[in-house]
Image 1 (cartoon, rainbow, N blue to C red):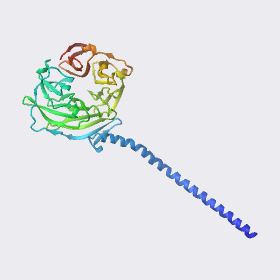
Image 2: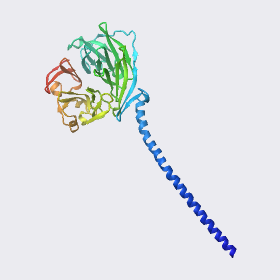
Image 3: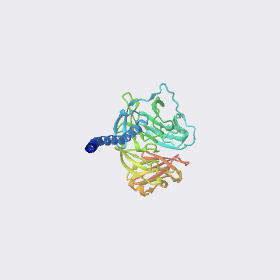
Image 4: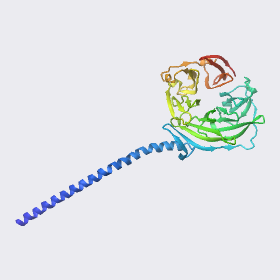
Length: 381
């Protein structure tokens, strides 16, 4: 009997010791887990934040313009990529293809401008750019700068070279005036997607070229030899894959009209960092151009947000924030004698504004603005 009790007592001690050991092991396991949880959280946090950075870098890299190490500046809304002054392709011994214009009328002209001492008309649907030494309304008097373009939209000059947007081929063509004719001297390929608008900025001595579908601004400069080189690409992330037709340099800012994104943007000229956004109603979302003249902002509307060109018009407002409420003045009928036209780009030269328009017999209209009044309007050709 005593032997049995001893065995039971020993058995109880064994169970008690086993339980103590298990409890001790559990405390150790819990302590280890408490030590490792912060590390797990840190790793999880790193994993959660990594896709954002990777997506941003991948978005920049996927444009094909430069590897990430060439990014010299980045903001929350934009990036600047150094392109190391790439010179494009030089055209050696190119012929002088300038000839006479054979068309009696313009076909969907996008721009008329005076630059570099010449007058130019970008005759978009005739796939040609015209030039003249004087402003004449007989289109057949104009000569052809180039026909080696597909649906060109704009031209700009610094007085020495002339850059043309070859929109559908994603190219920029460079011309020089030599021996009383224009010669094609350089070509830049893979300039974004459908580059629409180009403007020369005298302050920075740079050509700004806007890729209308990728949210990219290509910056061209002259090197020490006078050759045109691609200096930078500035990216505005939120306009990627939206159709925005132009821009206007306003001091140290750039104003972008609304496109398929549905709002206007005011950005820093040097970085494209977004400073302001201005919502607009769907009826005026398809803007072609926006600029400020005296007290008013003027916008040409090519269509509405659904691409309905019947909504084309021209409006103005003193305050861009009013556009979200549909508060603006329609002024197209004050400028054009044809109310069903489609206004496009506006340029200023020889003391007046010139605007191209589509869907009309007269494709160019001239007007002046004096003390915020639209005066001296004239249908040109």
